[in-house]
Amino acid sequence: MTLYSILHTTVIRTLRAARTAEQLKVAKATYQLKPLGVAQASRAAPSKSHFFEEIVMNTISKLYLQAGRSSTSAKTLATLTNAACEKIRTRVAENRSTPPHLLQFLSKDESSDVRIAVASNSATPAIVLWSLASDYNPDVRLSMAENHNLPAAILTWLSGDENPYVAIRAEKTLATNGYKINDKGEIVMSATKIERTLRRMLSRKERLSKADAKRLRDLILEDGYFSRSERKVVRNAIENDLLDDPAFEVFLDLYLNDQLRPKDERTIA
Image 1 (cartoon, one colour):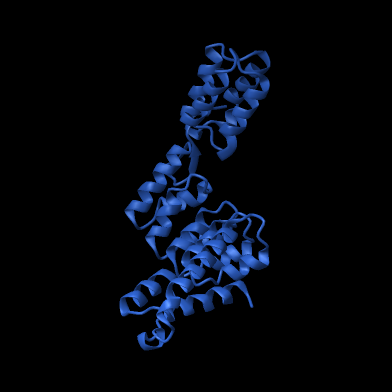
Image 2: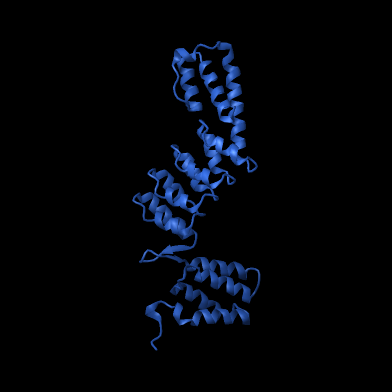
């Protein structure tokens, strides 16, 4: 008998042990199984109610813990994706050891909480994240818009969401991550993030080394765009003697590279 079968059978026994309609209502809400007739649920002896309830709670607790362990086998996780208890499925969706195909399966779960958990899992494949970015439930999209670990491209997509709360939150997340969206809808690196990184490097030394300058250069060019504000940061570092000689050469070469300037700033040959 599978783990899910054990849980399912145990829950049904607990429902049958309910002595009143109210107890049955609470039990159904707790374990989220299909309704059973009150007459059918009342057949078991009343004295067994507490016994079965304790078994069910212990079983659910054990399965919940198992669903979140990195050591849990893929086969067991696959079984738990079909658990009647939403919290267990959510825990599987949160587990970074859950295989991609199971995360894809859970991304179609009827529970929005499960889908939100899938979207927040760093192991979730990009193709699944893109699918969830168009989820019919705005709560799922809003949770993604708040996720600072999502790819900038998905956050940019969400910044154009039909729901204003989702769109505004995605823009704020992009800004916090050091990105902004230009007039063409393209993602560009914010100069604020460049300057913040530069200051953090200088907090440990008086001048930047060549390795530091290269890291900053790569960060600036990560989006393929060298904005005016980023040029100001580079020029400030050059003019205020914040670089050692090798680093100075790296930044000067970057600053003078005519191909990286905005078209309206390039010199006329």
